[in-house]
Length: 393
Image 1 (cartoon, one colour):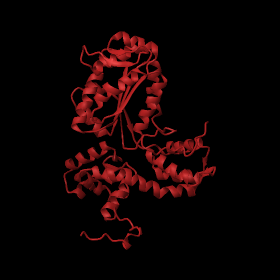
Image 2: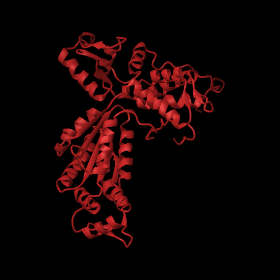
Image 3: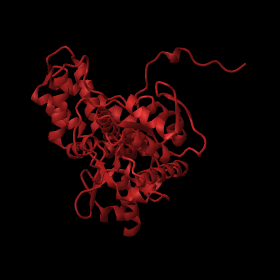
Image 4: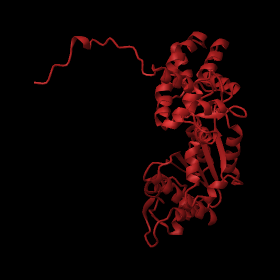
């Protein structure tokens, strides 16, 4: 195994982990499509899960596998202007990546003007450009040897963005009907994907393969930590590994973050110890609270927070009947918010009539908010007491 220079853990945004944990079956079956061209149910895929649960890394795994198999990969996020970016920038760039033989085929279709090196020059304007025509033409240029992977990350529930995504879904569905070899993958939290499915022209997406990201199992978490450290040429002291598994709670972003902090505590030592893991504990939890949990909490509605407040009164799982009493609402009313929070991924069912927090450390964060010390930070001694701001003249 080739050793990695520096920390092999990758907590930065958009950084693909060197060891991807979980969803081995999904990855294997989707990767197989890139080589066999046998799509089955995999023309469209919906990837849902918490922020930091591994959705973007999953897309990166698929993109790498598709590139290796010679596919065209069109990758973007669901921000405004997506259709224009695909048509005016991304697809022309992919044309310029085509092998000469595929470029010859594409030139013969007359959709684009290509130069002598079969690079993009301009689009023929006899017919209004459409994504469906581009996808069909590119697919024919590949002559069945490869296909087109489209990945769209960060699907959100904004009306304007959902309308644009529904148009893209319509174009892809027409391309599929016309024989294009396309796999399209949308990723976002579950409630946003469900909002997408309610839009016009997204009927074919309702038959998509679904991949749901939740926390990794404890054994998988330990394996990811161990294998990642091994890439950097280091091993774990058993107590250190156990503590890091406990700290990360199977949350993929926290696995990388805590692993990175522990690694950097004593990077020259051959073994990551319990002391290294202890040094990572507070830093990792504080980072996850400031970067993820506080933002999740601030995005929730008042009633969503009220539901979480009622849950936070329990140390373990919460009984729905108790939440009904604590909120002073009807069971039907409470069920609406329970289902919505489950769809966001922050809460999960914990047996018949029970729920529990699914985002690690969210419960502890809510309890501190209720205690009034969520923002209780020690006053820093930065020397400014000696330099009070002068009054305005």
